[in-house]
Image (cartoon, rainbow, N blue to C red; front, side, top):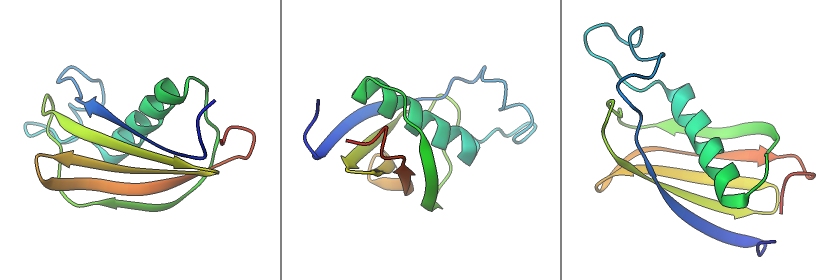
Length: 107
């Protein structure tokens, strides 16, 4: 069990071989935003050691692209029914947002 306020940091890197990359965009692949969101949830489930059920995504901002094989830092913050995230490459903010979780899977 974790406290009601908790944070975690992980490394995020999407392999060049990921099946979504050839079509996004041919010859110049970028990691799709939906793949970043999926990676955030997978990292949170590993951190919290349980499956999460998302009720909503009230905030998601994509500020800069992540390229295949680039390494980024994923910062996670969990509090009650909210999971906030920030994705950074160096000092550059790539994405940020918040998921609303069902009460059954929250803290």
